[in-house]
Length: 316
Image 1 (cartoon, one colour):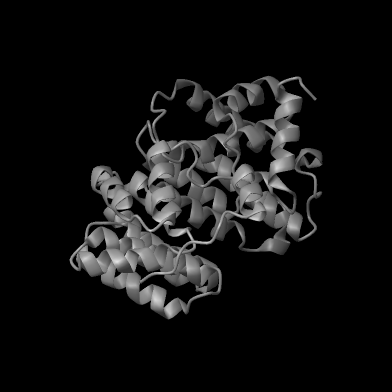
Image 2 (cartoon, one colour; image 1 turned 60 degrees about the horizontal axis):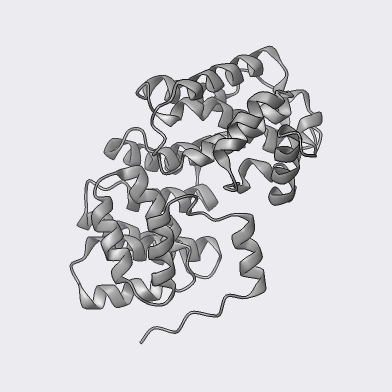
């Protein structure tokens, strides 16, 4: 019998107010609430209906896996349905999250991911789990290889591209500003390779923010991103304008992680001093702030988001 979930304490309530990884996915929120009470059937139904929408599947499994007892409930699910690939994938990602919190041996999480990958060879989600582990404590070479495994199954995988950008941005931290840094090359290449309606078009903006995080942590940029010149150079202005113009034309508002991109773009517009453009983005974001990039380099993301939104909307 799996252990009962803990009561929702004050600290968890505060965290939920600050950021909900489910973003605006109401079906996911409902399934997560049921899973927290040990009712894994809701997660089963959710993943069945998600099908091979790989970005949505990766998003939903990752969020479900964050629940403290998701590994225990996934094991219960596997006891009831030993051949369930969805249960195996959820267990694998739950063990990944536990390993990232230093509550599980990485080797066990890796083994679970490989077992799940063998059950569903075409699913990039177990490989996303392996990529998350490698990004946390592995080598650049293996990270690149695992990214290739994800991409061979779904070339436009949103979460995997963001992980790669974050990792590449950390190379040569002491080099200072470098418009030819490899993170920019990668982001531009990925954006060019993606279909015209792919949110990977925003990846150059993400790369710019991730590189700021690294430079600020190394003391090469001010701790206040709005006081940094990082967003006001010629190259930066071109990247921000192209991304904002693309967003104005974008008609696919159903992408499960689009709010991640909108937060990066709104943050960039705030740092660039383009209040009216930032306000348009804040209207779309609503209350769905994301920790990245508002926490960069070492700030409270909730406070930073609210202050930026208030200033952009003229309510400061």
